[in-house]
Amino acid sequence: MGTRFVVTDECDASIEFKQSYLSATKENIDIINSPVGMPGRAIIGKFLDRVAHGECKPKQCPFNCIKTCNVVDSPYCIMLALYNAYKGRMEHGYAFCGANAWRCNEIVSVKELMEQLRLEYDICL
Ligand code: SF4
Image 1: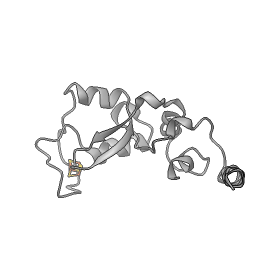
Image 2: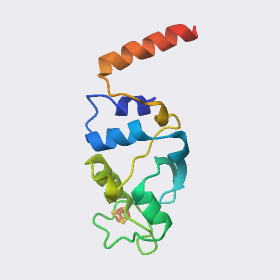
Image 3: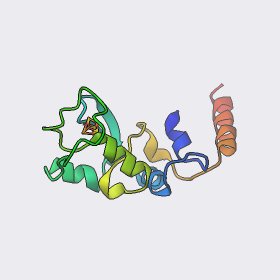
């Protein structure tokens, strides 16, 4: 459910972050193993492609934010990658998403989204 609220006017993520949802396809959404030991579903883009080819390495650990992060062996700092994506620097990060993020095709207001959800709910009854 949270996925649909990403592509709303009110979501404070960057327009580039929201655009990654609008451009996502079923084929470029996949489960990845995060550097902190937890799997997550993400939109695969240039950054994760570079990681897959071993091109990213954390230069430093800026915040020491989580015990399970193996800073030495991590391919990248996930905290920075997610913050970069949030700020629109998609070349240096990526977005997590729900399995159906590829279905998002427009940015709407929360009010419009709630109306859509109400309609979809009524159809299901
Ligand atoms: S995610 Fe980044 S900031 Fe957090 S412990 Fe790992 S390297 Fe450090």
